[in-house]
Image 1 (cartoon, rainbow, N blue to C red):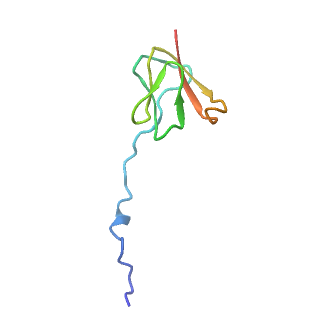
Image 2 (image 1 turned 90 degrees about the vertical axis):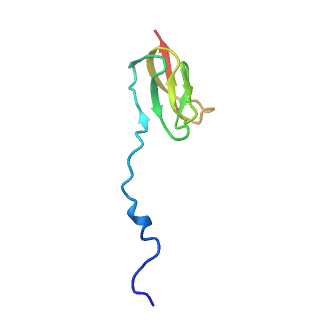
Image 3 (image 1 turned 90 degrees about the horizontal axis):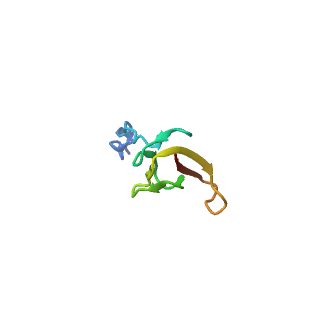
Length: 88
């Protein structure tokens, strides 16, 4: 019988993986220009609202220039946070 574990030893060596820099990129009340990235995410933790759109990789970006506002979603949106850009 073997006295050492040999299976999958190379898989354990891949622990140092760089971060993907996901998350919220702007704060509440901050002024943004059209096209600015507001949130990078996997899936829809945050939902796009007024003045924003959802990209193919679930990135939320501004469609208009204005101030950023975060609101809590309704029952239809399952309580998720909605990102809005209100134009000035």
